[in-house]
Image (cartoon, rainbow, N blue to C red; front, side):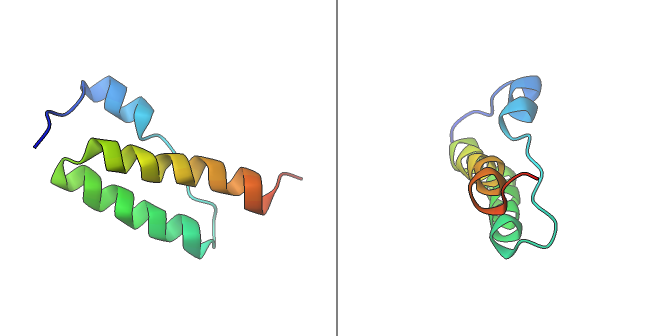
Length: 62
């Protein structure tokens, strides 16, 4: 298992907010939590990126 990044870096890397009511964001949030708990920070970061990017591309901004 790879070592975890410094806590402040990990917090920044994994910072994201799922769009309310979005099943895709919710699924990525669950996967992010599972990866984070297992120590797979690289995969958790990918899910965080998906969550951050998904509202921009799918939900749009008013």
